[in-house]
Image (tube, rainbow, N blue to C red; front, side, top):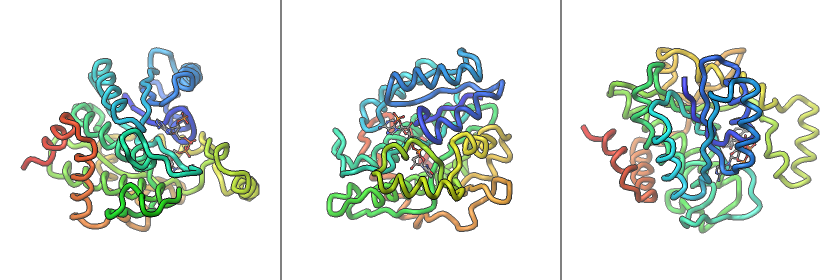
Length: 299
Ligand SMILES: NC(=O)c1ccc[n+]([C@@H]2O[C@H](COP(=O)([O-])OP(=O)(O)OC[C@H]3O[C@@H](n4cnc5c(N)ncnc54)[C@H](OP(=O)(O)O)[C@@H]3O)[C@@H](O)[C@H]2O)c1
């Protein structure tokens, strides 16, 4: 079982990697932007697993050119893939960052680059013997502003974060719809962690927020990255039938089990999903990505 994890060098991605590394049949490919952090995480995981089952790909998701390179690198080194965890993301940010591709950094890192990555690896997931799957780390909050996708008129980090989350929910729902009538099928679903996870974000947020978080931690409002990894690991390890059942849903953990979220995900309507799909392809402006999308949408 080969799992590609984006944002595996910290936080929830690292928690899931640590939980999966202890399983004898899991091979992990860690995608991250920092070579030293990738080397450190890989060494850490190799102690739980075996070095041969851990590999890394360096890619800064704020650069579409690096995503293209990462896709080529992955495809040159791997001929199979069973699951992707779409997890990497910017959370708190003190200011509006615009990337070299002239996009809002949250929109690009949290969504668009991973849209491109996913589309270009779907054919490998379709060949999975375990039932290919894409698991999106996406809470149920946030909405898209189609009239200001790059948040040029109004920006704050919560708006930016919410927009990336909404885009991911629209994307997994669209992918699910496209695969519903295709074989082999790839399961595509979101996961909302029911509690806040004590991640590297704590080291990035301003002092006042950190102080409030520390008080909340004392009242049990947080879980560790390892507890989060243990909750999420079955989503990657369970069989094809269980995974197919989850496809199209936002999953959470309640009453000791993984289950569909009680509130359906805000995925807007089919026209919005179609619109985001087209806008995303235009923004990627990448032949291989357009071809991969065309393969799915052709009747
Ligand atoms: N913490 C929570 O309670 C919570 C709840 C729901 C959803 N989430 C979502 O979970 C995801 C992970 O967040 P987290 O809380 O685990 O935060 P985190 O500890 O800050 O981890 C974020 C991960 O994303 C990577 N990343 C950030 N920018 C990147 C870029 N440009 N290119 C490649 N990788 C990049 C980071 O790399 P570095 O290690 O190099 O920094 C890190 O590995 C985010 O999408 C977040 O919104 C978090």
